[in-house]
Figure 1: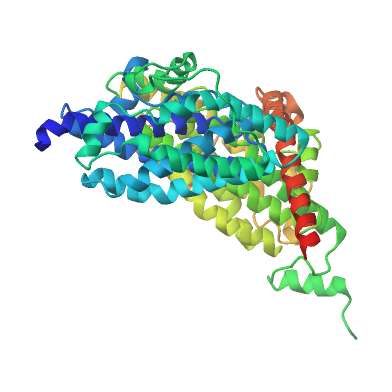
Figure 2: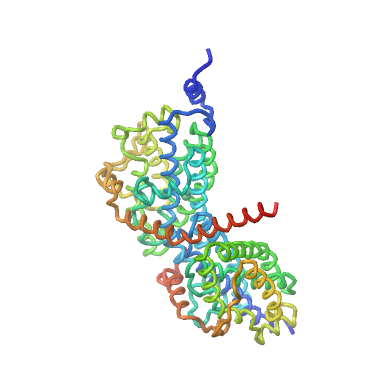
Length: 255
Length: 313
Ligand SMILES: [Fe+2]
Ligand SMILES: [Fe+2]
């Protein structure tokens, strides 16, 4: 397969990973000045900044691969809900600190597994982004792990809230590992990662944390799906409305 | 004859050396420092609110990243300063309780609302700019931990001021709507920034003692003049006009002379009657109360693990 044939696939793939990072950065930014203690304002801002940096590289690369001259900002601010291809887990509302830490544990474990494989991508740009991000995400996972342990094994209230946080996030877990044709094509050519291969190590890590924290692995009664095809939750439109309104109010302006 | 602790302290301060936490110090000195450092720490964390208000709406990803980094710095400044206060025998949670109860202050500048994106520029340029003028002399404050915290903080403040200037410069030279937004922000933030240096010298009762203790090095009016002299030429580069018809260059002294400050506004906001006083404190209390279960869990967890590891040992 020639590179020209691959380019649209790579553009979509970079967009998926970029949207994941961007949307989660947007959510985590909401915690700033609202965290339970000052150290967490710093930590969550730091994680949001890492994700935003990843998003910027990935969206820029998606625009370049697409070849229509779209910049990172065009992609972030001028697409509507149905054109975003992030997984739904990253868009769910922050909830309390328990929900946020459940989401951080689940997503960062997934993202770490993904980037770890992507480091060896035959696509140099993707390999470069993943190589840098893997260190950042290892910290994100560690941060979430420490909190899940503290909350799970802290007080009765924190235990209950942490368990409830897991229940809230769990329906969005399977979607992380749903590989489609595009992913399988890219994985076959050594460019992308077949996420279905990440499931077993994800289970092993997360189950280990839950066991140490005295938490129970939830049984999701329904399963979210479709983020990669632009099918999102109701909360997502509101997130985009906030994120995009100023940029869209001044068409063509520079900032 | 061996000098008394008080004589030692006076000599230390007079020779411009640093007082350290274990040194003897007059009770008034300690109290003044606790009050000032706490107020300073509170300002850093309350200041996160007006800027946090725009993280979600920043108009480009680059601006979003810079703003996030800036607000994160302010949280870090809060941490350094609470630690500096803790060397004087108070702890952070006590100081936060006093803030939440309205018994300790924070800078009144944060009781003004951030209404447009240009306010991010005006805050960086004017508010961080004024903070730098205020804080650089504190890097030589007689109390060691405060002086050292301030050295770290001042390094970051200059980045804050620059990013604010850059926001305004881009807006001022952008579309007509952007230019108007920038000028409007400067109109709203100019006078409150001049008030950041505190009341005029003849109405500032505690200043003389603070100067003698070398906590303070310049008077409020001196610092205010320094700020105006630094800022007016920058406003010309920005293409934005400070909202003061009396502003003019005094050829003889080289100082920019400014018009009358409305001190009744300053004292009203200080008393609690600014546009955002209530919101800021309610926001802080809510975040603090909603986070109580998390902090409790962290201490319970630490306690259990201490007990367990001692049990094993
Ligand atoms: Fe600061
Ligand atoms: Fe600052």
